[in-house]
Image (cartoon, rainbow, N blue to C red):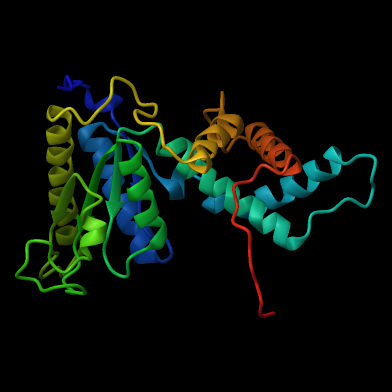
Length: 267
């Protein structure tokens, strides 16, 4: 039997995954996580705040500069636009999959409609690594099944990735005060779910990966997370960001990016 590991809230790290493509999604995600941090003292990895999504232009410029340095014998060395885009995408991907999630205790997913593919992948990855996976949903649209079912219309393939599934409908919200009050209720439910996961022994003795993936590609994600981010705490400091880009380009130069072979028969 697994011995439960008792942690103070401040030592529990949550990776918060959500669709982040519009004002509603961005505002909801940051607001909830600020409650989890301020009221419950959790440490949250929030992609829109702690990741690279808001630093694309800076990263693109650094990629161009550092690529020329790597190829200093060729004054005409340049990355193509597609190569730059691929590097930025891979950096964001490995930060989440190879660093944030492996170093979290909890993967917390916002699973309202339309379902975000990245969120689903990250919930499944958290499950693979033995993390406590918690999904929260507020949607009143029964996309699969109906609202009389306990899953409240979510696709069961998604909810089945979760150790805990929280449903809380936001009814009759007519001002921001009421909306904020409801977010506090959701945060309380998440706190209760995390506490239950802790009691059930879902947390390993330390944050690093508790289960090793069987796939060599998945193991490479973890390795690349260590290679790119090892020893760096402030990812947004200019010198650190430059070092991250240098490490990323070294992997690229060595042909080590874990990417699919693209078969494109129609141009």
